[in-house]
Image (tube, rainbow, N blue to C red; front, side, top):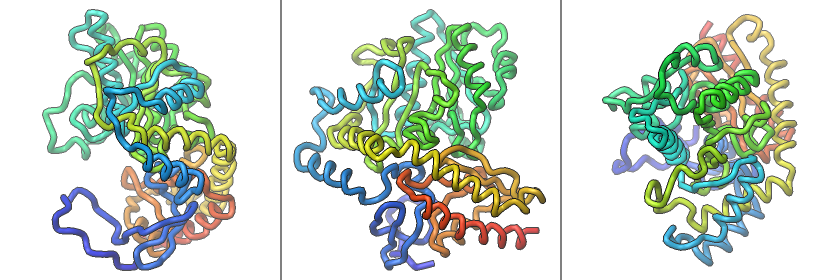
Length: 402
């Protein structure tokens, strides 16, 4: 692997970094400070929707930086209205709050659920969450997260969460039986950090029905799986349902930090002035990035493209790894569109560095799941190239760990 500039001794030690530093990129490719090229199978962790250096986005952001980067929510920000109207139209919901990150969007959702309960006279509201979930690293969102490793060392955790197995509506009913304090169900349509675990269509439809019957908020975290990644604007749309609360972030700004919480009629008027706020959220630069990202996605047909090339990649992986699937060395290849996970039978974190050496950027999550979330602009030829690089490395890993 090409050596990168040494890490600063002044940067807090919070990341186990791959020893490379990216300098620039174009499309689905990035180049490190030493000139080595890498095919980007990670997309900044599902952030770089339009890839790198997209000419339409670059021009728009340059224009916006020259005009106004930040003003403050004391004043109207015109593109907040433009982007909110677009998200409402795409989602079938009604109102939007803008913030800067997925964590902030999820915190906002949790506050909405609690105030929803308090407004109904529930003094200790409780929220149903799920095993293997990941909603962030603040004290509240890591309490909602279903990963003991993330939570370790940060107790006491925030109370008010009921944790159940994913994709199991009967478990929800059993865990909440006779409990009048439940106010919401909160989950990712496709669990990202938890191992690329998709919610089943029948589960999504059943949980929508259950929330309606019990007057709970259905809160769907689309931070990683939304904004076209699965071939629909939002992954839950494959089930034909509409949530009450939907946090967004990551891909909405194509690399510019942005978060949003989209609310339907049941949740849109829970907050009043003073209940929630943000300094950076909804700033002019982030709003322009969001507006332009969606406009370019529509112009370039990226939803259909993501569905198509994601299908090509998945079927290619299934073919190339068929023997390992049969032997059990590869346990599963799952996901939809350009959000795919390859689960190996053994922890495979070493593949991150091996892939980088071979010119491919990936991540491994949940210890043994290779996560592929490339830019949505990646071509069919490039996903085939991705498979050509990745599959022999999986072959070698399986043999070495037999």
